[in-house]
Image (cartoon, rainbow, N blue to C red):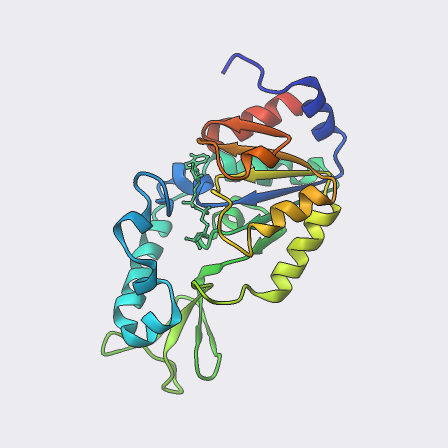
Length: 244
Ligand code: APR
């Protein structure tokens, strides 16, 4: 990419930033091979979230929901962090504070080496018993194909399903990061799923400089101080190449 992306104002604001937050969605993992939810090949165009990503659906058909998440986990395990995840990790020691507030459950930010990661919608690598709350990693016992805890309770993925509350501690900490940051990147999200998306406007109202990176314009674009329309795996490394 031989054209410079950054105008001087944006360049200076990023260079002078102490604290940077990256608010990310499914789009940042698209180049790793993980499908997004909405848009042309989005998961929710083919499958019904009400049948797969909510607690009642799990109680009604735990085998279907469990197997779907195992299928997604397999896709994720065969994927690698891409240059967008990697550059966020690489710049961690170039600024006073770099944190990630993600809606993704794919664990790719951590796998890329990001240290401060807030998972608003949980993490597909974790599971817990809905009766005794025993925590499980990959070692979930199966009984007749059903994820069963030693106590006999059903084990579910530690992800936030539609209609469920976000983990309050994580949400509160993410709000704090948004309130304190100088620059707030919004990468690969439609920004329409609440309460996660409210973090964007907390940053905006706290005076952060909002930079959107997305292949398409979104509901967030009018609120962004700067939007870069392109692939995160190409745009983010280029932005920091011009900065550092
Ligand atoms: N680089 C940058 N942006 C991209 C790329 C890419 N390579 N590919 C797709 N995008 C953009 C799309 O234009 C879209 O705006 O990523 C966004 C993906 O949006 P969604 O599929 O709606 O995903 P997300 O915003 O993360 O969804 C929020 O909804 O289904 C629930 O819990 C789920 O966390 C998820 C939440």
